[in-house]
Image (cartoon, rainbow, N blue to C red; front, side, top):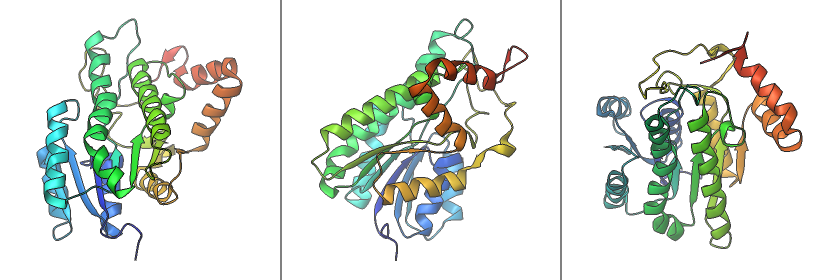
Length: 268
């Protein structure tokens, strides 16, 4: 029997990518899962695949406060409590600051940062009752600003700061707060990434063959939750980036530039 058996796990953005992998992994180890997303058809398909398992789906846009509140209220109505909240819903962007429209950055911030704030705020009383865990799925971009991803980096820096503040506030409460930085993972986030005009990019030139799978990433996150870790930084490149940026920021500038630019052109 898993320590997650019958635990209520709430996962935002569970219709694809890391979120979907987390939903399926938690169901497979006996947890009761509630997830939300903007695409009902994808959520319904996920629920159909796992028919007979304790999975609640809910259509919600996490950038909207009232939709987050309704989602959490519905979870409580159905399951009467929350043990784990994983703020996974997110979107990226690919555009230089000189080209990007302000509304694009705002959209990224609304989903990645405010979505985390809204769901955490509404779920907090119940997680404090259960002395559970709150997770923010962040990024290496939350430790190191990445070229062409200014809005995404800003949102993830904000998530990290919010989570660190909350962790300190709850240090003696029995609640664990952690933030996860997966590094580059095979998921839909790059294809759904916004261009300078705020539209889905629809393609990515990144080599996914060298990236961690969403399923492997989900297993690392679950193990970190079980151990009640503070942070989780995945992949060698991710760990190297955080290390260099902390101790040798000028070297990190050059390392990051070299990684994201090929012949002077930004990789999108």
